[in-house]
Every structure is written in C-alpha cells, then in structure tokens.
Image: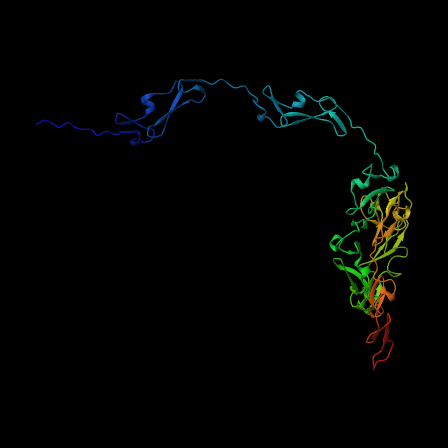
Length: 462
C-alpha cells in the first residue's frame, strides 16, 4: 500500500471568484498590477473591478505628466496670469497673460467716438446727437426743419399732419362706404357721388332697384327707386313714421305722447325720463316733462347742452373755468397763447382755423346750398359731411334733386273712392286722415270724415 497523494483545492477559476481588486492567476487570487507591472516609470497602477476580467488603469503620479503606459515626466512650471478671456472680467480681455481694458490697450474708435468695453471686446458708438461711422468719424445729426406747423402753410387741398403737408383723405379716409372724399379748406369733406343718395358718413347707394333687398335697411323699392317707406305710410295725428323693420315704415307716437299712432297721439304725464323727449326730464312731483337746460342750470355765460335727459355745461370758446359756476376770459399771458393749435384743442364739432375754434360749416362754403353740412369729431382733423336730404341725390353741379318717384295713385281726392282722401299721392281712408275724438263716431261722406257724438254722449266730437 502507498500513501494517497494530497489534493490541494484551487482558490479560483476566474476573476469573479476573487475579492475586489484581485484577479485569478493559476488558481490563486493575486494583484494583477503586481503580477504584470503594466505601467511606465513614475506611474501608478489602479485595478478596476470589471468582469469577466479585471481591468488595469495607469495614471501619472502627482506632479508628473506624459503617457502613463510608457513614462511620466516631471510637469513644467506654469507662467502666472490668464490664458483666455473667460478668466477675466467682462470689461477686460486677456492680452499677454494679463487682463486689460480693450479700450485702454488699443482704442479702435474714432477720436470723437465713445469706446465701451462689453463682453471682452471694444464697442464703438457715436455720442448722443451724433451720427456716422464710429470707427472713422462722428458728426452732428443735421436738424431738418418741419415742412409745416400750421394748416395755413399748406395748399388748400392739404393739411398739416405730423409737420408735413398731406392729403387727409389719403392719410385716413373718414368717409362712409362708397362716399367720395375731397380736401377743401384743409379739411376732409365727404360727399355721395353724382347720382347717388345716402349718408356720406355711413353709406352711399344707387337709388335704382328691382326688389327691396336692393336697397338699404331703411329704404324700400317703390317704382324702381329706393325711397323711404314712410312716403307711402299714413300715420295718425301727432304720430311719426319710423323704419323699425327692414324696408317697412311703422307709425309710432313720439316720446312724451301715447295713443294709437294710426289714429292719434296725445301728450300725457310722465313717470320716467324715458317718457320725455331727449332734452327733457320727468318732474316726478308734478308728473310733467321739463327741459333739463334752464336759466340757472349753468353759469351765466356757459353753454348748456341737453342729451339723454341730462344737462352738460361747457364754457364757450375763448373762455375757461367751471362751466357750472363761472366762465371767464383767460388772463394776460406773455407771450399770448393762441386759442388752439390743433382741432383736438377745440370743443365738439369745432375746428382750429387760423388758431381759433370755429365751425367749419360756417367759415367756408364746404357744401352746396341744398346739402346739410355737419361736422364729425374725428382726430387729428375734424371731418365735414355734406348730405343731401332724404330721398334725394346729388346732381352734377352739387345740387340735390328728388329721386324719380313712381306715378302717384292720386293727385286730388276725386281720384280716390268717396270714403278716401288723397294724401301724398296715396288714397287713405278719410277717418284715418282726420280721426275723431275719444268715443266719437266717424262717418264718411264724399272724401270727408264727419265726427258726431253717439247717442247718450255730449261734447266736442273732434
């Protein structure tokens, strides 16, 4: 018998069987940096715990530089100072390892230009009031005198807008749809074209039509022409006709009255301001409508304007102060200040003409004698509108003529039935033309309404 050989078990088969920083060499766990010495001189070896095999990394020792796998040498000593602009303040630049102001080191600007150091660079600018190339020369900006300072310095068909003589119709056409704009007396004037009707402030239209929809909202197609539907509408005594639905006239009682607008409208006491006319308010104690502008509403020389049942006081042009207490002429000024310089300095519907606030419709003949002239509060210039009366059109010479009317239904009462009367070319029942009083009976006799009190009643049947 022989002694059996002693078998020593292996410590490892692969790197993962070993502890951290050790690798498997012939069944034993050892430091790979010691076993293989992979690094060059003046370098150290570091083991990285990677799998399936450990990894060795070589690094130069502190104070040494170079390729750690071959050889590390002593690092050269660095010169003091900056290496780039990033190591300097924003106002400096790095020049010869020193942070210096670029404007002080080498000023690239013209002698009369300003040099500013921004973001490590020299920036050249001309001083305020100067223009030019800041690297070559800066010079004073030439002052251009304005073309105009007042309308009187411009031709009649131009206005002084932004210190330039311009056509206000071109700068901002204030006229309505299809209206023509011409400049006269330095102001835009709106007219409907020849042969057209309408309000030049809103819309102008051709009067020819075939159906109502060819006309504006407040016109009806009668005999091939767009005319007011109220022309053929007969309303009661004291009533008025208004267009409240498209192309149709409706009889209504005016504010402050009540009744059947087809028969008669009579004045009544009020309960609210809305029961009164626009320039009146309801005296609720006595239940009557009274004007809101009375002798003591405003200051003695002030102007009272009634609107929406309320008074508004304003001092006349050329005066100043509290319009509810006293309006006085402005005191002496040195130098004397003009009443106005622009239209915006003037009250409503007034324009600045020769430094005075005046009504342009009165100062100059803006419109033809047949047209209605009114001023709209537009800025910077007031706008003048020349409007022909309703159901008329402008002729070639600016005069207003009636739109061609259809053949009337009648001219005299005898053209109608005996119970009707001829009213504005239409046959209307006589009792509607001359309605009787309350509770009275209306009888029709030969185009005449005969009013009588019924049996058991007395009084004035009218």
